[in-house]
Amino acid sequence: MGKNKCGRCIGCESDHVHEECGLFGVFGHPEAATLTYLGLYALQHRGQEGAGIVSFDEGHLRAHRGVGLVSDVFKPHRLAGITGGHAVGHVRYSTFGTSILKNVQPLVVDYARGAMALAHNGNLVNAHVLREHLEAEGAIFHSTTDSEVILHLIARSKKGRFVDCVVDALGQVAGAYCILATNGFEIVAARDPHGFRPLWLGRKGDAHVFASESCGLDIIDAEWEREVAPGEVIVATDSGIESLRPFQSVVSQKCIFEFVYLARPDSFLFGRSVDEVRKQLGRNLARLAPVDADLVMAVPDSSNPAALGYAHESGIPFEMGFIRNHYVGRTFIEPDERIRDFGVKIKLNPTRSVIKGKRIVLIDDSIVRGTTSRKIIKTLRNFGAKEIHFRVSSPPIINCCYYGIDTPHREKLIASSRSVEEIRAFLGVDSLVYQSIEGLVDATGSPAEEFCLACFNDRYPTLIPEDFQGGQVGRRHVDTSTEPYEKLGVRS
Ligand code: SF4
Image (cartoon, rainbow, N blue to C red; front, side, top):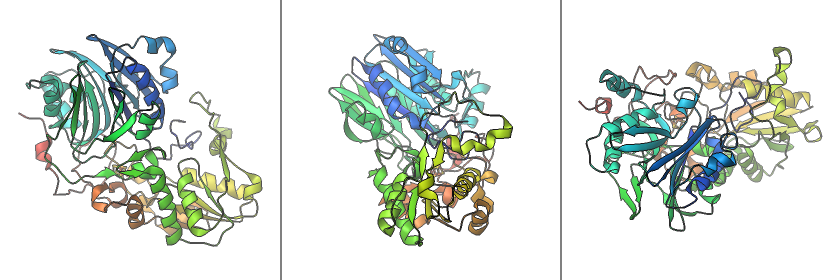
């Protein structure tokens, strides 16, 4: 509870998709750990359950990891102990494995060639298969994360250079990954061939910087160099940057939900400004579903740009109808059942003078279970809203994500089994219109073929094993343009 940036999960059953993880790394700067700490701060929205930084100082590994927010985990004396010129960091939301300390990343191991650390963003769809093979051969796992499989595969590789061992390991996994791996002498950054998750390469003076989103580069005044390409492996060493393309190329399948909700609006990813895409989503929605109303308002904060776009396109004024309390921390004490129903209001409170007697266009970026939306709408009614026209800037979510985004089970997704009219009646609004898939893709400025849209259209770009242990159940779609599952297991 109370674990995401949407601000709607306190006092209610979690009712939003959750971010996956954030990566940050610095190679070649005397303040590498401090820069990484700042970078993780900027990426906090991608994971609030744990944070960690690992550095290497003259061959000695320094690490600190903990459960909680970056500001909870890192106190000045902790940060001062993480010395050295190279560091990798991670913020975690547990999409796989639980949120206990041993799962907090970067994962660190000693192996035959020394020490190494790994930070992973994404979700491997064949991790359980690989793990079973490895355990059958005697491997001992210390965590329940899918990421640890990659460490084992690196350690077992017979290749020469560290980067080649990493490539060897990644060649055996399937699904979504961006990783930062280091042995203290180099940092290897990699993005899976489908490019589900974003990863940036930047520069600060002579140092090379990696970040999940460009906002992580901005906070340390690093220059944006470029996004790491799908399937690209970059190795940073004292000799500079080397780019490798070791994997067979496939059609990219970038996660379109990064644009809808996950990424920060001040970030730039997949070649576009997130803020611009969200505003365009609002404009497209206004064209698709115009309505006569007095004001447009957002469910803050992630829906603000889409609401502004809707307002610009429709000519209906934008108003701050909800005020969000930004100061409700993780230590918030959940009230007793008898008064728990005030849930949403602890973070979102309507401005009575804005709402009363008005015909409202309410913009939200998505509806997951619908339970929180219903409470929000009930609150608006209680504050005197005359009409509520609900507009959703993404299409109905009909299925789960297997690529690193935490979504409820399929049967908990309201749009998986109910019609739009049934959802409208459940929410208690005067009208309800979702974004079309065409409108969603149009807002990105890129062709649909470049994106994963599986949670909206049920077409998964990789095969999902029937016994996938991500805790989610959904129908499987095989896109025959991608690798067959038989190739995804451990090599014999
Ligand atoms: Fe993103 Fe949805 Fe695809 Fe998951 S299924 S990667 S959330 S578009």
